[in-house]
Image (cartoon, rainbow over all chains, first blue to last red; front, top):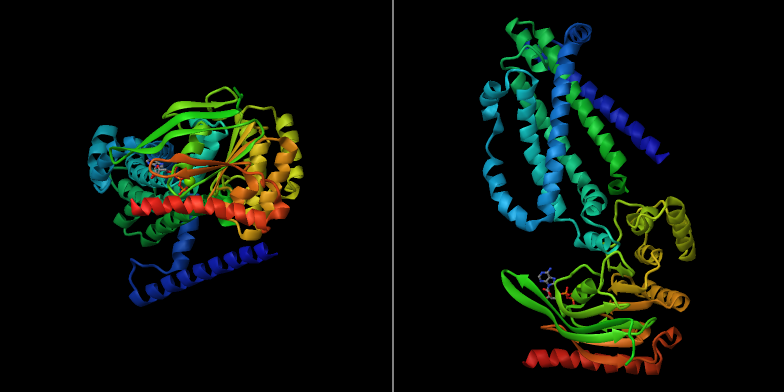
Length: 252
Length: 257
Ligand SMILES: Nc1ncnc2c1ncn2[C@@H]1O[C@H](COP(=O)(O)OP(=O)(O)OP(=O)(O)O)[C@@H](O)[C@H]1O
Ligand SMILES: [Mg+2]
């Protein structure tokens, strides 16, 4: 009962936010009265129409790039983060390298990736992966480092080896932090994706938006923006649900 | 010569702190018979947890001789460990916590189920299997920790301040509970405490430790052990003040040194 209420409350506040957002947009369009900011109704109509056209293809390409990047970043960052977190000696040796390279904005390497990896998906995936990887690595390492030592001793005393510690202590213990960093990373990933897709490519929502802009088709441009926003939103919801599902013990 | 179940001879443990070796334990000698309850009491930092971790097979960097049932300590063997907090994994339900040891031992599913059900039922935890540790009271949590240890049918039960974070009543309840379990299983138990009453109640052999480096300062055979009805009686309190004077005296020596 209480859960049902909470759930419907969530839906209502979501609906409310959407209405406010649309109203704000509509007002802005009214005030600015510029073709660059079309009113929401036209943009939404155009969005639905474009979905039946090539927007869905661009959406698919972008989704693919983000998903693969996030997954790769997690697959690389999580085990390495745990490894560093549980081995302070190794961490002391590796972390200077991390701190030296972490603040360098990785987008500056985009031209190099384009040259080395071509203008296809790989250069974009590598760029996004690289950026998210750092965030996941650092978060996971800190989470692993701060895990109560009691969990480790108790599982070891039960006869657990290194693999068991990964499986029963480090991975589940770090999972909430990992998912949080993925959620935060998602925003970064979308931003980088847009940037990467506006450059030397014919595919993806970034391209769709910039292409519409160059044709001064602003409704279509906003259709692209809506698509990008919805994509981010749904990915976020998926991560949120995953967190609720896998980390039920955090939300008791 | 008597054959002890647990025997420790000239145990020495060094740690490294900022590159400097620190001796946590030195020349520790004591032994326990099979089925005996030993209690270690001593000031903070005197090396009690260090001693337990050696016995639990978690720290193999020691010198001297440690034998449990004639064998050197090993984790995952016949020794079970119970900690003050943080022993139970918060991401696992009571059930999954209890069966973890059996799973790690690659027991088959049927066996695991029967063993865990029996233990949970016996400890009055039958209905709590689906809960997470955070959904239990402190007392229930320590019961689960005991269940997780007992389900492995250990020969030696090591407890590091198991009841320290409990309120007085729950603590007494669990002390009695531990005594009941001991009556039934005749396990060898080594328990660490900061609480003098707890030492007198539970320890057939009370080992008083002194710090820097940790040593057994005094061994006391305690005939009052297990007599929970004597809690608060004169002999009980006399025994407590006897122990207290030892612990105090030591602190006094340390202060004047
Ligand atoms: N992993 C470690 N590395 C370095 N020094 C340690 C380590 N563990 C313990 N020590 C040191 O060894 C000594 C004994 O520590 P230990 O934890 O065994 O004491 P304790 O008697 O259990 O204390 P308490 O009653 O506070 O639990 C302390 O001086 C402590 O600083
Ligand atoms: Mg301790």
